[in-house]
Amino acid sequence: MPKCLWCDTPNPNFGKEPSAIQETNQDNNPEDKEQENKPHKGTLLFWMGAILGGLGVHCFISGRNLRGILYAVFGGFTLNFLIGFLNPFGVSFPVGVYIFTNLASIVITILASIDLWKIARGKYTHQKKGFTYVGATWMIVIAILVYCVDGIFILAGTTKNIANGFFDINTYESQLSSIQDCYETTAASIDDYIVRQEKFFAAEKHLGSFEDIAFIESAYKCNNSRHFQTQDLKIGISVSYRALKGCNRNSIWTYSASVQDDKLVWYATMPKDEKCKETFPKFYELKDKLEKQQTESSAQ
Image (cartoon, rainbow, N blue to C red):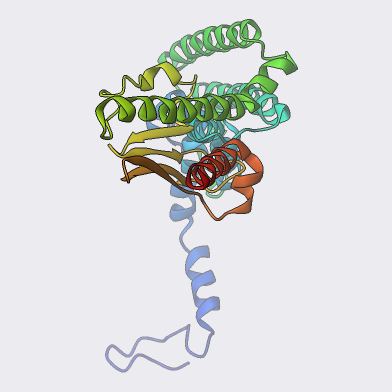
């Protein structure tokens, strides 16, 4: 058997593959195996499960990555945050999405509660390393309190959803029509602005601001003012679209005037997107109306 060049000790690993040497070393170290299987403290895992159980943080810590991803996506927080973030921009979802979101949130809350109970009882293991997390009596007490709080929130949320018409299809139809209602209101405000500006010019012989012509912008505020935003150009009015449905976001319609030969001449600029024209035709009808008036005025 070959010997070590320095100490003349026989080398039993000479000629072996590195993997074989590693397996031999592992077999010769039973203490390492015993250390790996030794129970670990479950304090951190328990608090992650109690506080962030719906996000699946405790699943990631215990080696259950796929389960953690499912908790994080379907646990209610992510979906509700996404829906809440997009709703002000006019993005609507089918009724089934709202129902699925609420039901998924309840299911994940129940599963996270079961995980918490296992951790508290010392019956929760690390999926990859195999060791068990140590539970404690105080964990069981806190877990029961968490169940009570979760139950109250689920009951209160369900009651609120029912009161708000969660199971009534008309509730969602009204949400889908909110952009259309706001569009109708905005179109009426532009028409009113033009009339007021022309009356003011006839009396004062110059263009005026919203305040000068007594145009009350707040009188035309719809339920969700983020859909359309109007701006005083001093020589006209502009409308920007802030939602995401039916027309490109940040599309702008401008109606401005100039004075020529002691008369008001109106100019209107429209988005080139055909979807905007199909979705909000009244804005374009106002432009056609102004152009027709200009033609008739010139002919006279």
